[in-house]
Image 1 (cartoon, one colour):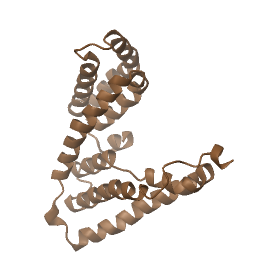
Image 2 (cartoon, helix red, strand yellow):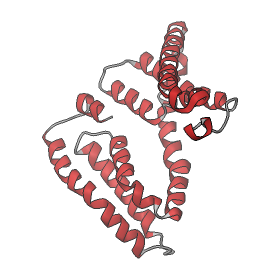
Image 3 (cartoon, rainbow, N blue to C red):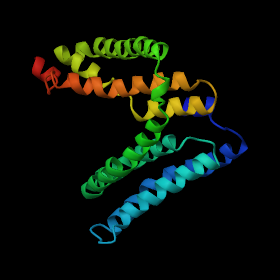
Image 4 (cartoon, helix red, strand yellow):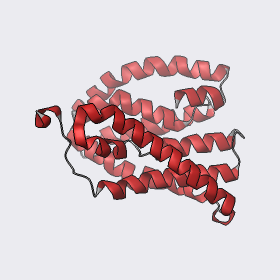
Length: 220
């Protein structure tokens, strides 16, 4: 996503200024967040959640409108930076999951779904989808399964299916490419269908796979 932003994003002087502010802020956030979480732990006003929401929305807004960076990149970086702090506070983590999966994720996928033109799904588009789906899903499954076979044994297929999920960043990549004029609406529809297929097909196939990995301890 960082490479995608550099290649297709609206990168300019404002991006450099934004990064100069962002980088030290990112390094200081764990300490600030840790202090806030400890100070307001168990508070009825849920200041920890308000802090995270304000941080996420404000940084995402500034990233897109000032830095020319897709908000998903900033959200990913914030999650990476704050992960250790959030994990230490289980209640905050559970509340954050609830907000993300009940509000942000549905809105994100709804917005992406409105861009899918069902009327444009002709034979050519469906043919492109079939070819790209086989290549994208098949190669990722094969590469992951072969690379992990010596680590997890017969559960390599399970790992290959897990690594085939390609939801949010796949949609973000397609959206950025469409806005930049790199792909047209037909190609966007194809990519979106592949992303959806990459989410549904592994979920269905995983039901037929064992739910435990063959770790080296078990194999020995």
